[in-house]
Length: 515
Image (cartoon, rainbow, N blue to C red; front, side):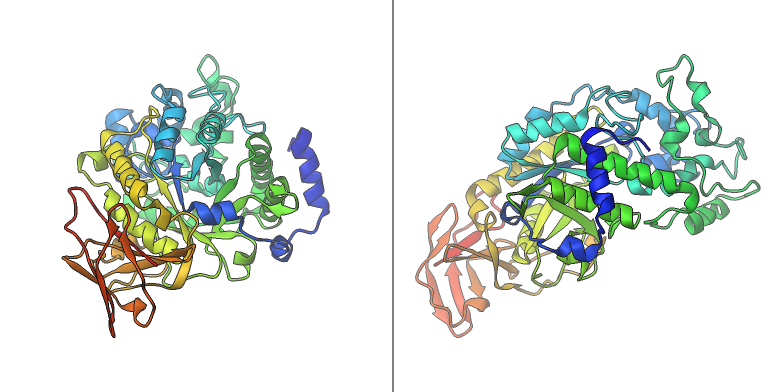
């Protein structure tokens, strides 16, 4: 493994130090910028978006019978002949305008912006010193992370990167398989046969496809005679969420660390999002965290945020927990984050055609629930393969902007109140459970506080009057509708009742400022 310059010195320093979870927790404090920001927007964009056929396209295009496989057959050919590597060659990002997109997100209320630096597909979207399969060399032939970083900072936003690549070594094993049924039965897919010499005279000349596909780890044996048997084999072997590597893949883990540190050294992100349960690769993941923290300290105080998933209480003392597409059911003592998407993580044209995106109203409802419980929302707006967003996404972003323009003071810089909220709807605790969440009602309220004011965020517009039971016994001198002026109210034993006007066209999620 080659490490050069500042990254080499950083690696040497962290390697000498004994890094463990306890040492990460020493002096750990989530910086105020993150606690005050509350809302970020994410561009989860890479070569898998070329197909515009949804999430995990790279892995699933090699799963016979899956919609992604069928899409690939129709549009590109059989995966034994035309594989994921060929999508990289098609990825030109011709409509990408990072400055315009990020300015739009800043107007919409985002206070930080995150860009995908490498997905499970093992393709770096930055000018990587330790991995030649990167966007500066092939595909767009541009340093995408560098472009996003400049745009974010020019718009006054904090900048973050997401790194999902620690799982590539097992995620890619479907590409070494074959059709279990049909006329191409038994013919191995492209990852199994391609080697560096096959690139002679092609756009990827000089690169080794095995460095992209990570090499064989769980190659399915010959002889599967049914799709279900093949898929069951993959589920048992490479379908688990593995956070460590077998000895044969130790070099992959070391290279992951080199790439991660290079990413931090080159772009100095304010936030690093790791798509891992805890930190990957044992001591190497801890070294990556320590290196990032060392690079983001300002006058001894930590200024950077590192997020990971499924953390124990002790681990949350040194890393911010991200709850993917999910909820918590109480106010947490430590800040946390939910990441979700208005659609699928990778752009899905079919979802657009079905008008299947989360509307702006639902985004704001979720934001209010999260912020009331001491969390942040990181929202992905899917980017098309060409680098643009579609008209339905633009309308959703515009709706979020209108709400923040009137109500942002109830979000930015706030802290949880004595209770997070009230009402009949209880969100299911845990991740990946959005589909099981009941819709919010006009009786559901979430609270934040700042500067002596309490903000009651009504998750739907009530008919005429709202009752706030949590204010029973609390002195109230004034109630204002943000963006609308003072409102009449009356106190009672069951709380405070506030008279609201009829909503204006397009209005959603009213906010009451209580003094």
